[in-house]
Length: 366
Length: 78
Image 1 (cartoon, rainbow over the protein chains, first blue to last red):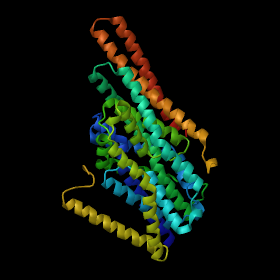
Image 2: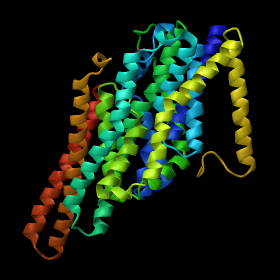
Image 3: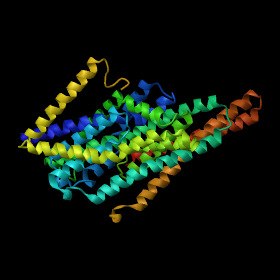
Image 4: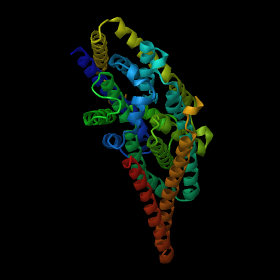
């Protein structure tokens, strides 16, 4: 009974993380389309939500990577997963508050690694997996997206540079309907699976599944639904940062950034790398801006974003580790997660209540 | 540690990303260019040239659609 209660708390927390993942990463899919006026904001987020839902069903490669490649699955317990998720949610909410596009994937990985380290020591973490599946893609993703988007926009400008701006902008706005949709779809294939992987890990840890089993259908459906709902609610603060604070984008740059981003994510998720869509689209936006003019990129904003990227894994690992320490301190298995959940839900309710009292909501314009 | 890094796979990601990202931008820019030229020539009464650019626009659009279809089939094929 106690073990099952903890498991359901973990599943609910994982879905809450998935919601914040969609909420936080809406900007990745829609910021370029919104800022170049290719689509009205509500239409853009609705389309992104639908395509994220669909994308979640298309591949389970990354789910398998998260579940088996970063931590030793046989040493992981549901309270470790729970504490890791709290670390990831805390980082997502903090970076949303400051309007910083950071990686939800790295927050999740950092949170789980931190709680696993505190609970079971260094042997619980697969160092080579962390390097291969997190560090190398994290370094590669923004640089590759920067180069691909930069080259793509140079090619586009060379071809259409002497045409009248009106038809060119209209054409690229139409193209953004396709490139934005493709990006949202690739986001769904990449990000919803991380939650699936985490729930799978908890089910294995609780003895409901063996590591060789397939991801259950209810896990796929619930993860797809949570990320789609989060995407629809939308994190407008980050949309503003991505859409207009890094560079002032024209439709050709928006198209090049989205096309390059989708190309990088699809090729990476095809081979099972859990890439950060945030790193990819941020790098692509910077590349599309810098290729036009290096000073077109607001490097101060880019620097803040890069700092958040570097801090993501250590900060979420610290919160994950601390949460696990509190959970363990509270004693028997179910008391810890239940108490921590109740405290966090109460804190969130107070924060939400304050925002509603001051006439602001979490959804509309930050 | 270095044994864990699959350089071949990483290289594949780099090459495919570059080819797909630049390729999509190239063909869609051709769609816009050829459509604009076809319209200009059509308005100026140069039917032959308008038709030529119209065909180029259609072929580029076809290539763009094929690229998107390929991307979707890669996702669905996993």
